[in-house]
Image 1 (cartoon, one colour):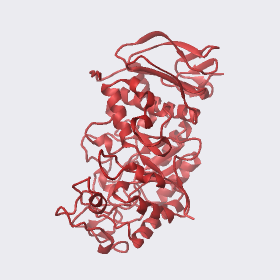
Image 2: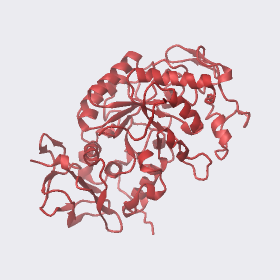
Image 3: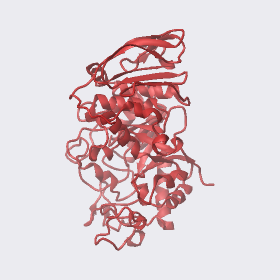
Image 4: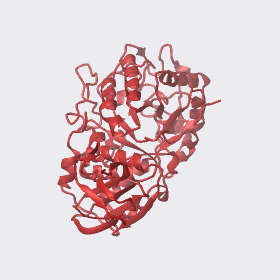
Length: 482
């Protein structure tokens, strides 16, 4: 029977104090699952290019993030809302986040720090401004006319619902041929449109980009995406936004031949478990819950869309429980994880911190920007993920409720106590070699030293510890003291 529980505004005070402390400032093949030994993606949502470059050098590289996902870089409509970036008016790399030169400099800086770059690519549609206007970089446009790029014949006119908008998600034709909230829907079955979209993606590849998040993929047939991908000049990591809808005819599974697919059920299921069910249920989380196969699944606790939805996911506002959910995601060997990095917002449409012209300001963490990817619990668990890559789960333990523990076989160990009271005097079998380990939930391991508690694993692989309510302990081989 599911139980429901009230949570105080601030939980696990020791954990919160730690996590809020500032951190350190032929067709080319589809690549499913990010390549390389470091696979965690940081989604620096709406950060400008100089700030991304700086973050790659100061934080993402040193903390072991393998990729940074950046927001759409093309010229867009004017405005201060977050969604203007998803309304292209041209494919010039000039937006409120920076110029083409700044974008190229950012890519180079991230590569120098060992971090690859994924671009959020808007390829399903152009703008949704019925009366047209002038874009960020000065390009003029009308709703279905983009001079030098597209004309009226390059768009769908589905002839339904009066204004051509999608109404019925149970109608495949409507979802892929009508307009998503008035956004001019590109005719992606057209050879010209496909070549134009491929030219945009190839331009980004020429600047050094390593992969693409294809926005609104559900609104394009998988075969159209496959054709566009076949025109790329080199291989790139591909992840597609396909939101699962119960009973809908378009399913995420259709798109796995093109690359990875976002598993939107993951964040909602994880939030429900942490908020109102039992962590013990997570024993087979992932494919055992009907989610996509692990090897093609891109997972996240929240992203820029879901954190603005109806409260079905955990977000930065959940503080300690959000940190624990991210810790679980980074420890659990299912899918390719993305860590969200938000700015503070109080209304759904609110854009990032900007100047009077709506140009995005440089990021100042913890001052208008949440920077969840820097929270020590989350940032340190990236190292856990890297240290345990390729290993399975063993030594699972649960108390039937909200205290769980498991090994990443021979490489790491995580135990979470999400009960309302402390768990004291219990011993845990890790399967790890004997030694002294940094508890990376509460401390950072640097140059052989630990800034927090040290846990001693005995010759038989056991340790004893007290764990406060809504808290955790995490150990891994790369954080073992000399």
